Image (spheres, rainbow, N blue to C red):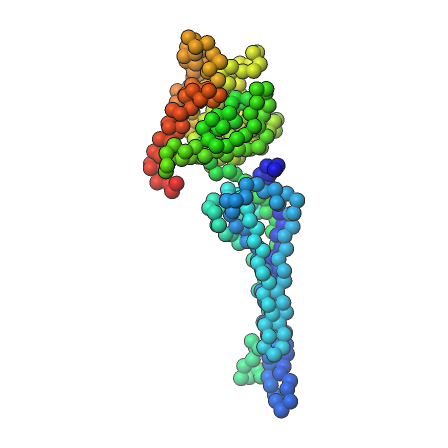
Length: 344
């Protein structure tokens, strides 16, 4: 299924039904009085978060949603029937923004979270409401209110604890396959991931975290080159970024140092807040380096990059170093949750 993480929809809540002016007319009851009922309320439109939905593809082609109008009131004290509400089910992590005011209306972070998008109009009053001791034959009634109308932009930001960052073919998909049950496509020829993938890494029975793999960045991504910039939003909710470096690139002319600097530059251009997130360096494909020079090559790379934070040497293909990496991530996440007091 094609991954869709953006959509624009229009919602039209239902109009309230009109009240009615009516009088009781029965044999032997010459002055029955007013009996006009109220109109029913128009249907409202709600958004509900559903963890069983992964993309916004349902809203790419069906973009207009209308709730029904409430029924008009009738005589004999009959009230109009209210219209049913319309419920739009969306993936957890969807951000709903008003396209006119640019106000964030809702951020669906929890399963079954329900948010009102457009309120249906209230039904009008029948003349029964205007009866009094001085107004025994009221002919007043009111019309139903119009329902609200809005246009919203839907933007999906996947919920993950750790995000993978790097150039195409750095081994991000191979790493997520190695440490989780996720199975993104990998092969022995160069190509790039086309949609985000999520994997759950289970360290112990009650210790686990979620890792997100997005399409690789290329130079100029912040200006729209490649696919990676379209999916960087999915890293905005993560607590930790892993920057994967291909230490044995497919193209022998490619320079790992230049590739690493290009990704850092594009990340900063895209979003300063994302750039400032905790980020660890992961030197991948070390199994393809000469065994007796592996440590020396990696240390020289770290010095040239002027990297002072944590770094790891792994091989996602053979699994070398992956276990230690996942345990370090789990410890960091637990310490982060404990220090910030966030709910897991």
